[in-house]
Image (cartoon, rainbow, N blue to C red; front, side):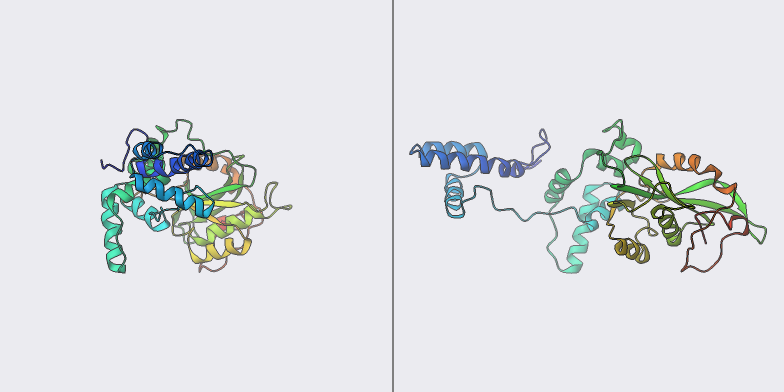
Length: 315
């Protein structure tokens, strides 16, 4: 632990200093205006914040010049998509993630971040439960949040999307058996399955687009729920972050938020694995009767004969 860290409070001294700086400077300004400002008072503030007396006088002078007691924002490391992906690839191992980030920075000719800087950014921007989920999976994250509740949102404010392998097989035209994947969108506020698509063999980007069409449209063959969400939360799967999918959401004006999950060998990242069982239960009748099928263009091949006519089946 360095002198810039405070394990008890979970925040670095530098972060706490920023929060207290404005309060201290405003107090000194009030004392100056009342003719009560003394060097002893400035020395007390400096000692409490762990800075020099000269630094406090500089803060006070800057506040008088700018009219604001707020400190100048420091340049600091942010948890970007790249940092999140590296943390997920390293299963939450901060030291390994730092080594990879330093290697990438050296290749790109940038100054690599320090290990303590990365620790501070993780402590500031990510929760302990999130890091536990990266290291050991979703069950470990639940230890920090037994109910595993997300912040309350309104209807159609946040959707979540994922793939799930259905425990059944279908017979293809050539007589071979094929696995079945379900792709769905779920409204976070109501747990309503907004739309879904069924894909023989393996899910792909057209499955995502077919399910999106099913979720957005409302009418005789769709609904009753539908419309456009404010945001869609996805994992880092290649199907959901493909150019075609990004373009489709961009055209609809809906931003995507990536959720980083561990990517160990043989493990498939999901937004919320428990949702999959509920989706499969709700969509159990999906193979029992014909209904209009949203088209899924852009990928060679056709759906299995036994699945044609099923609403939401992607090629």
